[in-house]
Every structure is written in C-alpha cells, then in structure tokens.
Length: 315
Image (cartoon, rainbow, N blue to C red; front, side, top):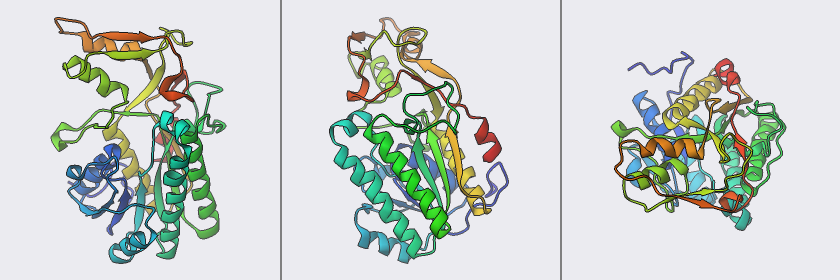
C-alpha cells in the first residue's frame, strides 16, 4: 500500500506521537498510520485505554508526568502529535469538574510545552461538537458560536483556545477536529468499542440484542425531535481515523489553523437506532422509558447534527 492518504498530501516519515492511542478512536488511527508505513509512538496511561489494542511502540505515560513526557520527546523525537487523550463523559464532568480541568486542560498544556521545547510544530486535536452548546441552527456549521453547556465541552474549548494561542505565538500548526458521535468497529483489526462502564448507545443496544444486557433505557420521550427521543449524528470510527490522517498530512504540507466538523450531517434518534436490533429476533429488545429528560447527569442537548461541507474543502 502506498504511504499516502487519498488526498495525496505528504505524511510524516518520522515518528508521530499519539497520546490516547490505546483508546477507542486513537487505536483505530494508530492502525491506519501503521498500514501507511508511518512510525508511531503510542502514549497512554491506560485509565480507559487497552494495552492489547497497541501494536506500535508504547509508552505507559500520563500527560501529568512532565519528566516522563520530556523523556518521551527526547528519546523518540516525534515530528507531529495527534492528541486523543482526554476525559470525555458529560455527566462525570458535571459531578467531577476538577478531574476534567486537570486531565484535559492542564495535561494538554504540558503536552504543548513539551512540543515547544523540542521543536515539534504539528498537532491534530480531538475536539468535540460539545463546544457549540445548544445549537442555534441544525445542522451546525463549524463557524457556529461556541458556548458549551457542560464542563466537558468547556474544557475542550479551553484546549482549542490554548492551541490557537500557541499557534500565534510559537508557530504551531494545528487542526481541531470536532467530533459528533463515533460509532462502529474494525473486526479485521480486532478493534472495537469497549468502555467500563459502557455509556454509549450503540454498544448498549447491541449488548441487549446479544443477550448480554437485560434492557436499554430511553431517557425522555418529549424532546423536540420527530419521535420524542434524542437525535445524534454518528460517524464510523474508520472514517474518523482517516480524517485524522488527512488533517495530519495537510499540516505536514504547511497548512495550519484547520477547524472541521467530523460527522455525516445525518441524524438518527434513539428509537431509530434501537429498531434495527429488533430484526430477526424471536423476542423484542426490552426498552425502559425513563421519565427524566436530563441525560448523562446534566448538560446534554436534544438534537445535534453537523454541517460537514468544510471537511471536504479543507482535508
């Protein structure tokens, strides 16, 4: 296979450092780079990632350990960083904001300082549609005002702002990729979605369909959507991985300050995702209708899909 992504921009010949590369999305990206022949160093504290997902060079390092981070940069001399490491649960961010500001904001500052000290200029960053807050229009364009409504979204926005400031002051080239909802797996790579505890809808639905769970709960049935349940924009994890490769190639070619939504522009409600799991089953998936409309412990939104034309233009 040619060591070029589909957009034919150059990709790194030197090592790429991937904080959070043992996690769900990060591990898919690492495998994609490996298939392209790019040397990769995965850095992960394994708080949510899985060591078995990593075949590349692995550093069991927490971004809070500045001495260990300095050693990693000194020994591996990465030419670029693709940053997946972060806490990402909305409800937990509401109940434990301290953890989110430490893990997401302070640890990212540590990473940026290490990059600056070692002359590493390019960083692709996993941001989120949660930075937009309650949408003023749907689908959401990438130039939509950012007014996050929970600590998770606010920490991600702080991370974006830090990278913008470092780009202006120190010449970093940055790409902020605002995810909507990642989904899917790559069985041929033996990679999938595994969280403890599992909170993502599609794995929960499949767990019930396979008999591994007794039921699936729907939180609220009176949202202003076509069937009263929340609506989300889902993008396959392999497409996310490819978008990161393309963004990295653009930075290596000299581009900077890239901002893109990563989604499909199409929304699916909770009920629409549950319905296919009913097909071919002797007994129906057990659905519990919860009365509360407060999802994830607070700070969630009713319906969110993204406008994605810009990703085709930029990467």
